[in-house]
Length: 401
Image 1: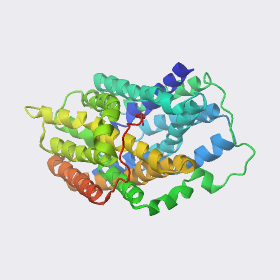
Image 2 (image 1 turned 180 degrees about the vertical axis):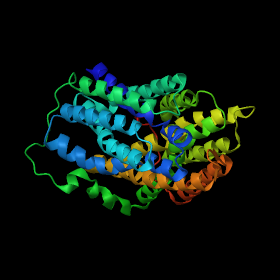
Image 3 (image 1 turned 90 degrees about the horizontal axis):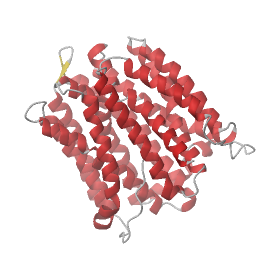
Image 4 (image 1 turned 30 degrees about the vertical axis):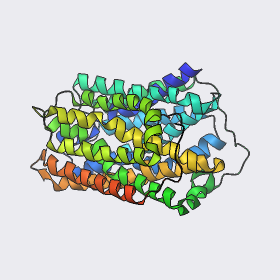
């Protein structure tokens, strides 16, 4: 059973990793979209993250077997990816990928929910299953980079093919019927409204605010790093970017060790500080003698991601009442992958557009320094305002995100 769930995660994140990293390069270098347009397209997944709880709460919890919902969403998603790959205008590309994101983003929660339904101890076992999603992302990055198609629509077609395979694979998974078929659907079941009152606590409010704000400069990385690396002459940029996911796997193992020595506050702070260092490396690195700076910026992804987002999950699990833990995790996901990355997609696009030089060149030093400056502001705000009430004597088990 666990291996069937691991393969599910492998396909699930291979689909996303196949197209999302390089879509900005295709839009910028081949279709000559503006920075604002590229940022908007990258932000379609954020819109999907905002709306997806409605799909999850209604379709899988109350109406249909999770396998059937997953299969249907991936088949429809495959069609939309093929449609998107054929377009050349911003309006049509945006519409197709927005529709696709509304199909794909709910599947992230659905695959997690399905896996947890069929393992006996999710807290101990889910991480070893979810990590195969990261492996899937890495494999796709290596394939796309070696294939040399970063500036084409081929990654979208690759993702479409994987989506069809995933749809078929869903029917090999165990039956997962809805658990709330006979209960009335209410908005509070889909949206994490009941956990909002936890934000009255200063520490939780500061954490929520910092989580939202740090996802704004985060979107600079997701939307524009591949385009940046290709513009400055880095060979096989997509393949090299998988170094970030590889470091993510390594840093996951270090979380318990650092937790005992740093505690929640300073692990979260180190995660945010890593964003400042990463963007500074990008600002002054190049594909020649300073390539080590670009490598360092990429490899820092493990600390950037794990030390903030994974440790943040642990913090919520510790602070929220048991009955509200899931809802609070949902609220933070809404603030980060939803609102934070949506705002970040538009802001990053506006900044890149403002520092465009000619048709296909950018002042990347200024762009990355702006992103790093924003991250530095969030870091200082968090360090000054956040108070961790509890000292941690024992390290919790790290969880995959």
